[in-house]
Image (cartoon, rainbow over all chains, first blue to last red; front, side, top):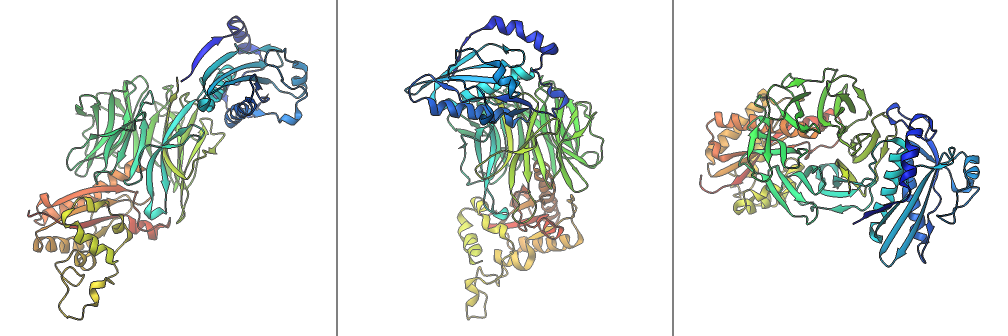
Length: 439
Length: 173
């Protein structure tokens, strides 16, 4: 829906980046965890066409929400501004922005023509007195204006942190309504920030744990539509769903795509025993990857597709294990106190996120793939089911509150453990799956 | 609770789809069904006083067994209840059963689905060991999706860690 039209000043981009990486002030190292957010200013974008000023203001608002929402940036209030940006092309008065300690300045311009929208933006390193990277322009339709704002945010985030962004992405989740003993569930899909919610199923049967395909075009989920839990696959574009695994008498659940988008791993319960299987989506050919008499479930591929992390209670309690993609001997990687479940491999490959239960509390945590450097990021009555932002820096999960009025919500947290916050959803929500950055 | 017996009668033709009726998650019947007001001493067929009725199975035989935390081993009380269930199923051989396994909320979603399956399977295997044909018994796990008691305390958790045998009229088996 949107094409990146031109890079305005690519030569400057090439020159400025190495210098900033070494000693420029405008740089956030996310790995360290940011204590002091970077102050920035984002004035309303300039409207370059009649009737575009509302759109121009909204775009700047979404960019500010994206950046401030990371916890890495702090927006300087508009009433502190000394200069105003009235023309996208005019030189920036760096001294005026320095005076209010804006380290980064983001300017933008908007042209609305019928349902066509063009957005341009620039990022300035105020203290260096230079533009950071090249100005960029996006074109699309007005109904996609939020995506364009997210694209601006992704570019700004990426230039300042050196990491990929995650704002122009979507989350598929389970929308929940009704009391705890009569909960209704249906699949919802929304922007990462909770905007533009749409529903993929009705609430006539229980649906659980949707999982995006690597390109975001399909979603795997578990549905009780037949009276029994079975894995379904739904096409996000046309909302057509089919049953993927339907062996008579067996239950199938906990599906997840391989990085190739062709293979699916999942749990199949036969009698009392739950094992992990894989299936080719096209041929529907399956193979059994675990054979222990214990519960093996919640499998997740490494990003290179060579290994699978999963949970098993073969030792007596839920713990995390890694095995080769074709099955075979598994190595246990979790050894701390308590139980470990729902492991998910980071898209960067470096960490595994998990749910931990210990001493009556639930936690979302991360560990290295060899089980070392375990860190718990959250603690509550019930936190579970982590999913990774496309850049591997943020985790979204389900938090359920205690008691008779207990309700599920989505939360996100940095892998540093900072910036825990609730994701805005229309009602109760659970089981998020964070999709890829959109093209 | 008159809806339960109505639903069960309707289920004659819809044995499997009756499973989608959420009413049965709301606990035991209280016996106050409209048919009980009959003046006759003979039990009204289909009422909870009729020993051949699913309502009798639910209320008098006992349709559920409970489990300890994270366990799927049958307790002595559970086995006694299941002995009664097996006897009833032997006598009423034209009925089918779906065994529903459940877990309390203290656990992750996937694990609880598998745990509920262990519980339902334990009941299924026990009934088979008492001579009930496997072809009459199906099982399904709801994990922690269908609690009947909603406080976040052991008193509620104990009720939710259950396997419930749902009777439905089947075709001749």
